[in-house]
Length: 469
Ligand SMILES: Cc1cc2nc3c(=O)[nH]c(=O)nc-3n(C[C@H](O)[C@H](O)[C@H](O)COP(=O)(O)OP(=O)(O)OC[C@H]3O[C@@H](n4cnc5c(N)ncnc54)[C@H](O)[C@@H]3O)c2cc1C
Image 1 (cartoon, protein in one colour):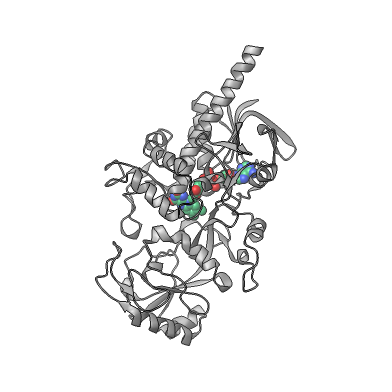
Image 2 (tube, protein in one colour):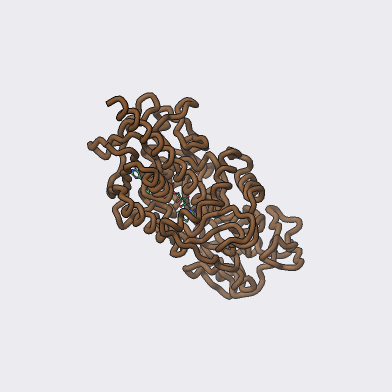
């Protein structure tokens, strides 16, 4: 029997497996995906939000605990567990050394709108390289890894983990870490959660999944049905407005469209529906997926003019380009008159001050709803560009309730030997909203805690059994 069974093959699972192995436990890791698709959503990541009190290796300036916490508070609107959030924040200050020991390399961040050197540590080679490094290190340390090993159910008695099933195969272990991600690739569950909207549409039919197809939430559902305590709800998800041409799964970051705050976004009736300049894009991009999901047809159109080119990272795939707004409307399939009216009203409302996209500048609108509160410049200089947007689900927030030791809870009582990490519990810290890089922060911190706790629990059971023998 293994000491620790880790279910999942992404960042949280790998951190847990490595910590458990380092603590002296025997570890089996079960990854649902085949080897070539291993690593879950973690392969798509680029960075981790990290606290630091002064300039350090790849981090500039300082990003102290309080500022980080205020960012979490703001994006979640207070739907967060402060103790767990602060624990996560503080632990991010100390994990880069450990990550490097297991082969993760960091790099200086990009400049421009994606300049996050104050807040985020970037992985050299992205999340794919991070995951590969962790798998290599885990293999070297003797963690047993099985691919194509989807855990279909768990045997749990009175809150105690007994075994996991991969089909008919029963796998027992002294302790278990659940790190199997959210349920974003379970389209039926998304559909059930989102229901039917005021236009008679099932919005989830038009969602694209930015990451892995293997996060189906099978175990999450089973545990909640069994009485495990949960956090957040099934409609909460990190959703980005992405290029509508993205594939159904695994489009990753190259489907991002970063020009929203530089122009206007309209729905299929060519009407604006939200403040495009409310905050910096990295703090707002995760709201726009939901905003687009709430529009008729779950579609949006980001429109900019030539003045703003060069001020944001250009989308990988070119948008529609036209010399006139009339032609752009035709290319996007929007009603010409409706779009011209929206742009005319918006242009007339722009109070242009000193445009500066690196600060929350004073260019804003007056007298229109919704307002654009920063970076409001008239759209008047051709050629004009349009990008069609769809909601792209990054991950879901419904998860298992936990505390600082990462135990799964049943009726408020912590399980002795069942632990949880990563997206399966991220909703404890992020009840809603998002700030770039927190997913990997939560997964790394709680993966490490869960692995340590699982090893401790398993090894102490071993001691008890040995003493009894
Ligand atoms: C495009 C994209 C970009 C992102 N960029 C960033 C970023 O730069 N920074 C950041 O902090 N966050 C980012 N995120 C979010 C980040 O990916 C997640 O927060 C993080 O990867 C979650 O890690 P995890 O280990 O919990 O889940 P995952 O990495 O998704 O791993 C879940 C694992 O569980 C496996 N699994 C699922 N069900 C089962 C089962 N029944 N049995 C066995 N195995 C199972 C899956 O195959 C997978 O290996 C991004 C996400 C996406 C999609």
